[in-house]
Image (tube, rainbow, N blue to C red; front, top):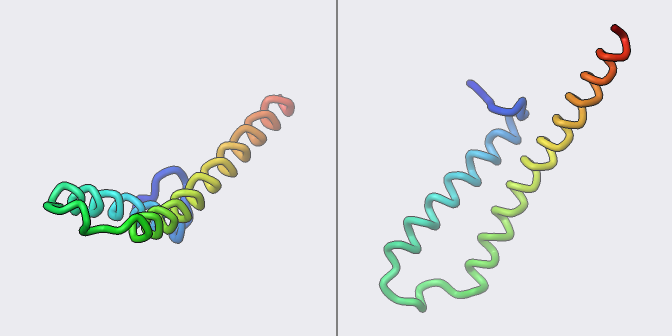
Length: 79
């Protein structure tokens, strides 16, 4: 399996789940004929769960970038 951005398997699955959730909601919102189909609470719950998954992925990326910068600084000092 090719995981982008050096994500762990769990983080990669959360990223995939977030992408699939956004796609699903886009499709569902596009097919809604009545504005009363979804309540604000339903949408808020969905967005809250989606936000948690995206937050984990973003935090992982921030950690990875910091590690890369630290390693590159250390390598330049050694030379």
